[in-house]
Length: 468
Ligand SMILES: *Cc1c(COP(=O)(O)O)cnc(C)c1O
Image 1 (cartoon, protein in one colour):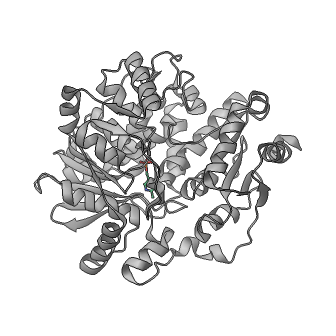
Image 2 (cartoon, rainbow, N blue to C red):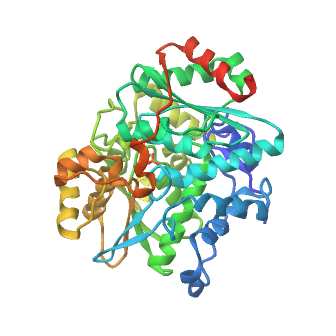
Image 3 (spheres, rainbow, N blue to C red):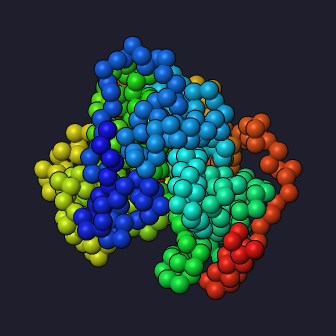
């Protein structure tokens, strides 16, 4: 197998191998890294698929993306360790919904949201790569809820990492806060900021922009533009297509925010998985529905919904799809993104749009319809789904072209993560699974700091492991 090489969507950053792409995140020309060549997945032995485990599929699909930075044996061990943390034998179980529809449950990881599928792997890859280089990294991030706990679980107890997560005081749910503050590992620091989520994000951005600080603590990020996160998510599209499509075409409906999850599906398609349709589900923040409906999009205000992890206007990973649509021409992508950011609006050419429309469509689901869908699945199928999953389910029902092709909807969070919305739909509160049931008995540990950059930076300097 050839060495995996990565190029920037904006065409002027240096080409890198996997190890550097893992640690770099955003390319230095402002673009996102993508594979220079997409490997293909073997589609020739369907008789083997029923016997193949999720871990074996993951090793098969991802190894060509990581060589030679990670050797085959080392990587296989990391993958096996990663998915041993999931609480289901199939890792991402598939549930039959009838009428050739299926639900893929991505929430069996330690923090009950699909982000664990990628972050559990990325934390381990970071640690291995940094240890090999004899380097350390200080991860900082801001969270409005889900990403913080998934990142903390991924980085806890890893020698080469310290992690500092900023969350807004009084604005994350009790479950979400406790998932961050009850972790006892000494390299984990949850920080409550006396401010909003935007304030937290501004502090993180300012730390990255502060050169001397950034270099002194070697700042790193685990945000969703990191290629390794997309790569880890490609696996379950291959897995589901094999299990359910048995070689024939399948369609996916994906509740979408930053476009990382569904872009992993697109990568699987480029690797050879026969995908008939991608349905992109959005809440009332419907910029992607506009885009896939008309080929144009205009930035609006973010408006809060019952599916907060999808309250996003500009989906960073869309740039990776745009790169393909514009013929993988980095200069064109740079120009497209500059105009979009500058003017707040952008449109594709008609022929580019028609090409996309063969596979892609988008559907916006408001809070009322989200609650109705949760209630209907509870009543008709005796299933409890979270609000994000409900958006994807309804979008898939509405935009499905044919029942001849299996429709696979992605369940991105456990219902107990969003108990208020679920309770208002079905009249009862979903229980946390046993394996995290003692969350409310554990001692919380976190710092409370003012909304002030200098104070937060001093805290980071004083508390990272090296400082001792
Ligand atoms: C992050 C998240 C999403 C959105 O995924 P993207 O990759 O950002 O599109 C959907 N649902 C849940 C529960 C999430 O945590």
